[in-house]
Length: 205
Image 1 (tube, rainbow, N blue to C red):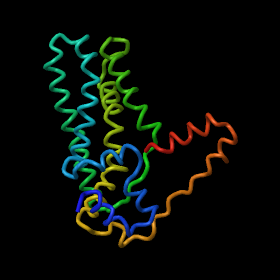
Image 2 (spheres, rainbow, N blue to C red; image 1 turned 90 degrees about the vertical axis):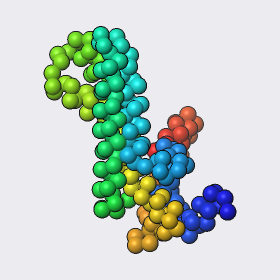
Image 3 (spheres, rainbow, N blue to C red; image 1 turned 180 degrees about the vertical axis):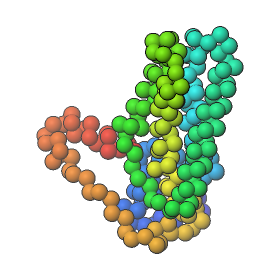
């Protein structure tokens, strides 16, 4: 039996709301297509830390004399920290068995840019370099990945592991009631451009 057929057989008994909760939005659905060992919350966290580190190459190269050594050090620390937070989220969800929830996109998408901008201003002496600004900048850059993993991906990964073991992750739970969205036409009226934007946002996590 192929993997797709096996997956379909295991999820055929779930109702639509449970399947939607299991798959999630566009970001989670991409991760769910990976092998479970590769999509472990710790690995996803470390990958996020590496992506943030790549964005720091340019400001480091422009402001530090021995920038590569410093970047390697900070890259290693960042990847280790985000991977550790991913592991902690996995262990916490193993105990609490909390179901996945959606993450506020405004927080998820904006904070890395705020942190990156703050790091840039510190590096170019536009603002004073202090422990507070350093912690704030690094915290803003690190927040989205661990936040998404803790709230959304770690719980969903646990459900996927149960499905892989041919267990029903919703066996001891009541039917999942997802918030019923308003009809697009009720929100946007007859504005075709606004309807298209709403439908595009609804397709993302």
